[in-house]
Structure formats: C-alpha cells, structure tokens
Image 1: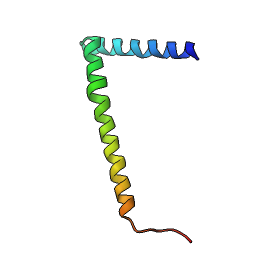
Image 2: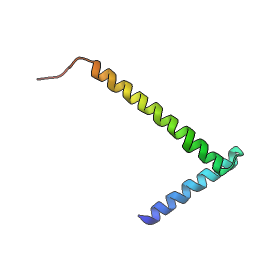
Image 3: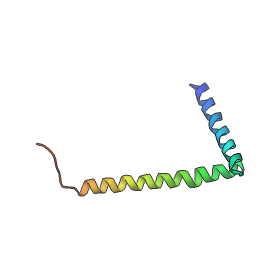
Image 4: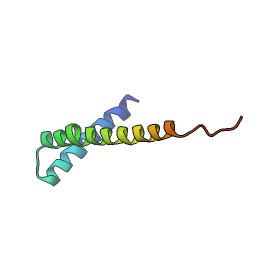
Length: 66
C-alpha cells in the first residue's frame, strides 16, 4: 500500500508541475489556484446544493407507507 501511495503522490505532483508549465505559471501559483481557490469554491457550491436539497426535502409533507 505504501508503494501505491508514494506513486500516487508523485503522479499528482507531476500533474501539477506539467499543468503549471502548460499554463505558464509556477508550481506554487498553480497550487494556490487549485487548493485555495478552486477546491474550496467547489466544496462550498456542493455544500450549498446539498443544503438546498435537504431543506426542500424537510419542507415536503411526509409521504410514506404505514
């Protein structure tokens, strides 16, 4: 398992380095954009979607058998 995690870490690091090079920015700038802007933004959006679905479900009258 440790070998796989090592491989995964280096694969992701290489991906970030290559993506940064393709975009013409540094590795650090790419990490800032990815982990401090994109990831939190997506997380907040998904939490909002789930919260709205939960609220809609709670407002609905009980429909069930029994």
